[in-house]
Amino acid sequence: MLAKTIFLIYFVAFVNGYEGLEERSLPSDSGLDVRGLIEHYGYPFENYTVQTEDGYILEIDRIPYGRNSSGNNTRPPVLLVPGYFCSSADWVNMGPEKSLGFILADKGYDVWLGNYRGTRWSRKHAWLNPDINRKAYWTYSFQQIGEYDLPAFIDHILTMTNQEKLFYIGHAQGTTSYFALTSTRTQYNDKIRLSINLSPIAYCSHMTSFLNLFAIFKIPIEIYLSLTQNYEFLRYQPYQGTIAEIFCQDGAVTQGLCVAGYYLLGGYSPDQINKTRLPVILTNTPAGTSNRQGQHYGQLILTKKFQKYDYGIVENLKIYGQPTPPQYDLSKITAPLGLYVGDRDIYAKKEDTDQTAAEVSNLAVYRYIKGFSHLDVIWGIDAPSVVFNDILEQMGQY
Ligand SMILES: *[C@@H]1O[C@H](CO)[C@@H](O)[C@H](O)[C@H]1NC(C)=O
Ligand SMILES: *[C@@H]1O[C@H](CO)[C@@H](O)[C@H](O)[C@H]1NC(C)=O
Ligand SMILES: *[C@@H]1O[C@H](CO)[C@@H](O)[C@H](O)[C@H]1NC(C)=O
Ligand SMILES: *[C@@H]1O[C@H](CO)[C@@H](O)[C@H](O)[C@H]1NC(C)=O
Image (cartoon, rainbow, N blue to C red; front, top):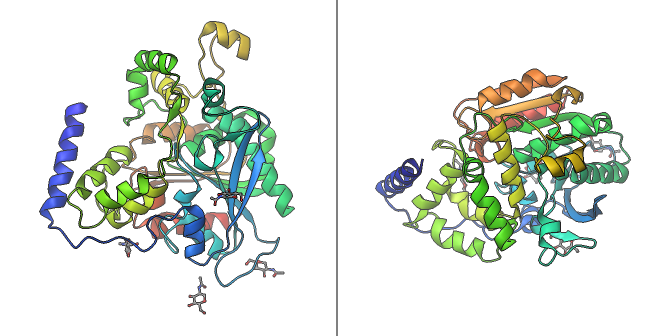
């Protein structure tokens, strides 16, 4: 695997160099954060904080209406939740007509962008300090995000808009936490008109991604974490945008390395990546999260089950009242559900998403998209025509 990785980096760096270097240039929206991007393109920006039942203070950003329009409470609300170490910026970082957040706002939706616990805008808590009470703050995974963060987002939005239901759109871990919520706190199914799950991850039996490292190095990682107390993963750094601008912009000799990293993280798909956007993407991503998330995925890879976090027999008995963690029962997800997965996704593999599709109770749509990687489903050059148009059509039916 290491040899393959090194080969891929060299190969991509070589091909990129071979194409010849253009002039160095940056897109005009490089360096902007979520608010900056939304306002730069002439959309209204609002933000709110909510507190979860377990004390985390979270930020929700909102694009209440699109360009040339005005807000009113008849616009259907849609909640967008991003993937592992991602934040609200990832739904607007391709600009208007190309980002799902902007497209939904222009099509008449009231767009809410959730930032789950521990990420850049939600690195807060009512009584824990993330830098001091590290273990207590950072030991969460998509399990707690599903059980606590999503209900806090959903209830806030429904109260603010005076609506009974909303649309849910998640990417990757944003789907895992959705499955965790709606299969356990099942009353939340009644608050969902339709959920759209992009690069959906429940079963991880066939995954071949960097998350497999959490399975392969399970014990060393556990030892490392207990020794260093370094439970935070890929924390947002204010200088990461500047570094990305220098090394990843068009015309930089090092851009090939950035592209190789992108493929390693998301899957190889040269037709869908817009290299010019790399500095904008990397200005806001990574946004930080907990190592526990990766450890939890590592457990799913090893056990081939979709289940809650395994604390070991003694703790499991205390927490769950049984020696092994309870499995998530996908048949309890009764709200209509859509699955969109690319055939080059290295996280959501077809065998695994087929199993999810077979087990949920109300499958509305299941698309398997040719030539798309894990990230192309939200950022790909053809995502608007191939994925987003179809999503809008599905949403129009609910
Ligand atoms: C949201 O509002 C708070 C308080 O005004 C502010 O500190 C924060 O930076 C805002 N978030 C963004 C993304 O601008
Ligand atoms: C908004 O209005 C401007 C000027 O009339 C127009 O050029 C633009 O296409 C409109 N945008 C949308 C999303 O309708
Ligand atoms: C509210 O917004 C929707 C979506 O843009 C629009 O279709 C509707 O006409 C608006 N209603 C009012 C009362 O302005
Ligand atoms: C790639 O991004 C640049 C900068 O935002 C944009 O001008 C260009 O149209 C994009 N290319 C494609 C194929 O979408």
